[in-house]
Image: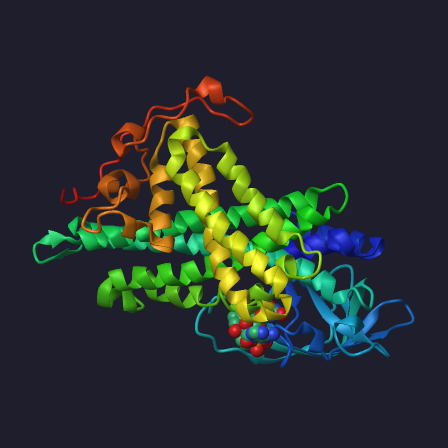
Length: 477
Ligand SMILES: Cc1cc2nc3c(=O)[nH]c(=O)nc-3n(C[C@H](O)[C@H](O)[C@H](O)COP(=O)(O)OP(=O)(O)OC[C@H]3O[C@@H](n4cnc5c(N)ncnc54)[C@H](O)[C@@H]3O)c2cc1C
């Protein structure tokens, strides 16, 4: 939450507030202020506009806040700063009456005089126990206005969009850890005379974890690059903003779901031990469970998506299909299968968007279905985009096989091929499991074009496929 607060201060805060507090967040001498976002009141987590905390202006221009915050994480640090939505005296109800304030833990320049507030409860939580979450009563708390009345919710949403990117990245990290835990366990655990990693069903599960991680990472980075592009833009660009919000909603929702699934499956694969506190999988599963909840649960992301694709004049749907088209058009001839899949998916989502445009009043009914489908389609599109690059520049087909595997998992592609055969990725289990390159010829894919033909910004010389690192134990053929 420190990054979102720094971001909002840098972008929105009045110069004097920025000058005083931003250096406290960006300093690197070990005395950095840790930050929190305080939006959730007793009855207003998703519905921030229902906040009841009041702000009263003081003679010196600062404010005093009276109210509470129901969920307050990143608390207990010696020195912290929080942003809090509150309602100035006389402001109307709802989000139009909200302003945004900065609450410092101390009121003086030397950070020695504690601000006025009381911690009334320490939450007992399912997970994230290393991060205290408290209820805070604000009883005349000193605060500084960052965004005036009417702009408070928008400013808080700017911070939340940033933390949703972080949520997505954290989720991708959880997925990789889950994969590593499952892989390590399966590599040495023997049942019925064989290592788990030699069993086809275990190999399939490990590959599923690995593919979810690849897809989740692609989504998380799409959100991060979308956010960066918007943050670095010299002047606001509505299309860039729309893309950033669209991708962030999809990534926040999907990666959180994937992380929970991966953490659960890693726990299961570790058997009874995985359920105990003696192994990391139990804690990891508990911690992952918060990812779908905080920073806006599924339905809140679905509503955000609808603002981007179903509201009058919304450009999100067009931007989405354009991205698919751009990836499709950039694919080489040898990836005909991926081109066909993108055409099919683009047709499917395109028809959905046309129907949605005809019935915008039904948006709330179908918002979650669009969220699920568009997140999967975007993940697939991004996997294909990356796979084409790896094929062209590294002569590596691992990305293509991963994209095909994801297609099979999500869109039932496998039903079109013999069900009793291993998937193409499974046939290369050793390479896929160890992260090694896969020679295109061995996967039935013509090698990518020569590197000079593809040389461009950021291009690397084509590398010969690296040999697979020896797996911990040779799996069964
Ligand atoms: C461990 C932890 C730490 C947290 N730390 C912080 C913090 O530091 N700062 C902070 O401000 N908050 C914090 N939160 C709060 C968190 O962001 C909220 O709990 C979360 O955003 C959900 O809001 P809510 O609890 O009000 O749930 P609700 O809004 O009551 O939502 C309940 C369910 O209803 C759904 N829903 C809500 N509105 C609609 C709608 N219009 N249509 C369809 N479905 C809907 C939601 O998607 C959800 O599934 C924390 C939460 C947890 C669990």
